[in-house]
Image (tube, rainbow, N blue to C red; front, side):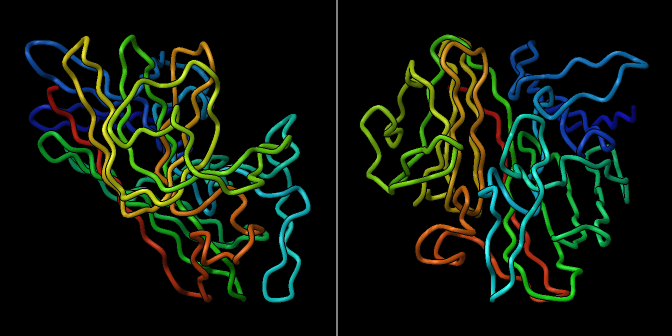
Length: 294
């Protein structure tokens, strides 16, 4: 398995191109110690490639989370992505995570990856992913170009896995969320319940959260006061997904540019964050993860 190591003056990252183009780790070197900013994957030589649930982070392209099993209708055309995870009736997380990415360029502090899915169906696309370390920040750029013959709604995001250590606090503003149906799809749009209102920063609730939040201002902070470390997240996206299973030692704070099943929600694809790309058009999103002291 190919492992690309990136370094800045205070950060260390490992990129796994053949494992969904994902990250194996992102560490901050501070105060004579190494702090894991994302949950690390520890690989051994000769081991099989990790699954996405073992990675520190992976890209979401050409959509995030779930689409209704019946697919969706766009401009009079039925589009039905096939289920792509065992035991899951919905197509989930796009399909960029199901393929190896190729290295296009690299340096000591950055790497650019490519995924060519021009033969893909129903989404035909080429995606580009760039990781760049600059001082205490990891800057990530994800792009997708529609290489199909007709317009389609596209969406992007990142799926980081974060250690749920004692005392962890999340700060992230949002305007609303949705109730969750039996397939994990949104049902009714609602105001954010108090226990999920992280606008001023609070601990994660004890019960499970697996919801998308809208009206995000693109700024978030995860802090571990017990270790004096914080991780600031900035993104040019207006949604985030919080996946925090009850009793687990991890959680996921996912910057995304559209709602779950945005292809079918009331108001249409654009209102719910998706971007219609005509053939040859490109969508780009950027996320920054910055280390700091509490």
